[in-house]
Image (cartoon, rainbow, N blue to C red):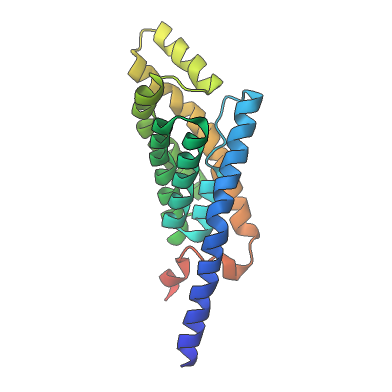
Amino acid sequence: MAMQSVDSSKGRLRSTYVAIMIPLGVAINYVGGTIASSLGLPIYLDSIGTIIVAAIMGPWVGATSGALYNIISALMKGNIMGSLFALCNIGSGLIVGYMARYKKFSTIPHVLIATVLVALWNAIIGSPIAMVVYGGVDGNVGTNLMIAGLQALGNDLMGAAFLARIPVNLIDKGIACLVAWVVLRKLPANLQTLSGSAKKEA
């Protein structure tokens, strides 16, 4: 009976944090994306919330937060096709969330691995989506300049769109992963297992 009470308490605690963290992740993404766009930065900053939530709460909560951000952002901008970029944020949340769950997001080398995986995912998935939604380019100054330069060197638009997104995403997702790692390390021990990582110790 006592064990059931403890399990129930943990379940309620997690549900409470899920209800808090999903909108918080959406808000962080929105603020980051708005700052990057307003200042004309060559990065996106719109996946920091997704990756923080994924690192703390696990893959599917992080993915949900990321997807909701892209859907809400697309609706606010009146460009429903832009919601396709939710696939990028979903992948980012799943990658970091599962790494955190299996204790592979606890060191700087882990952060570097997560950065490379998330950056590649976003470049691979984001390039064809950008072709569909924006004709290959998007609102990011850095990406568009690199695309123009790569095309001038003889690359076709699709190839240039993909290659340009690799360095941009390495920087962008590197920032997001590092911030999430720092936040996770600063949390109390009981909150560092909300992603489900405690199950691995059983």
